[in-house]
Length: 130
Image 1 (cartoon, one colour):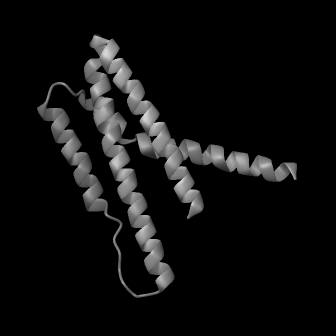
Image 2: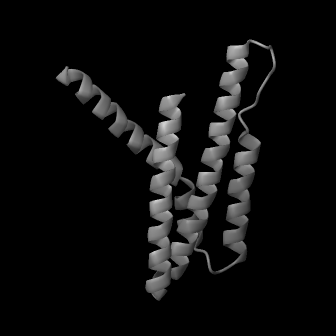
């Protein structure tokens, strides 16, 4: 679980950096305000979904290790509901660009993939040096 926790921390840092960059764009470039707002909305929902998924993975792992026979779900309905709420907000309020919001929904998944590859490459490179 230490690898998962470290990866989630790295992804959260990257998300915070991305959202702060979008806030800077939103504040200083008025022509891109709707795009930045959509990216912020999508990324925040993506972060919430990532944290919900981490919690479910930890729960499922704990149940499997305890061998208690309890069943656990992956929380798909809760995560898809968050995406639907973000989409409805983006459709209802013109301050959010719809396509930017949808792109933001995939930020945590993309960041996890990229940071996971970097971590695996560094681990492999470190082991080859020994």
